[in-house]
Length: 208
Image 1 (cartoon, rainbow, N blue to C red):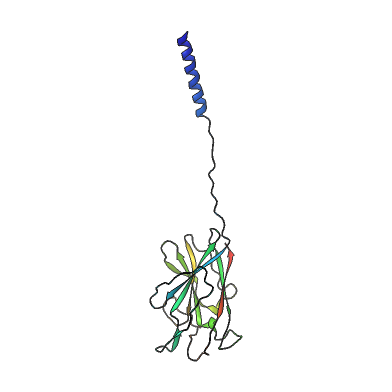
Image 2 (image 1 turned 45 degrees about the horizontal axis):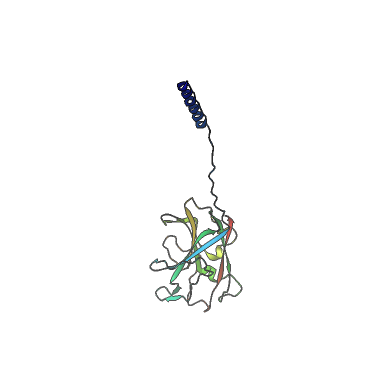
């Protein structure tokens, strides 16, 4: 009798184990990254002669060319640095689509006009930069005078995955090295009126 009871209990245990093996539960794993809420511009001075980058700033509000230096060989004024403006986001992830526009400011040559002001004497080069390697390629927008950045002229497309857009801003020198300075640009020279020339670049996100 004891042997028969032992077999019955063992059989019951095997049946319970089989039933538990067929029961499943699931847990959903979830993580969220917030959408970007704004633009972040990283401004870096780069020595025009050595291409050595200086200290970057994410809070810069100016591109300060400062007092230009006269080049007696070419009879033009040049700047020590040009500036790179890397375009990123704040508040979350995302690749922004941005349009860059320019407005003329103080113009000692022709006050109140866009003739012979800073916009004709400085340039913007539009680049796409690989985030991993730092390799740069000139985008389809190429290199333009700042004064030409109106309306949709400075509208950048969405960069490829793993890259970001950058705008290099420099004083026009007539350089023919690719990408060459626009042929309709002008240098600063001794024919210009002394004073401080200003303008404003505006970066507008059309999507984040």
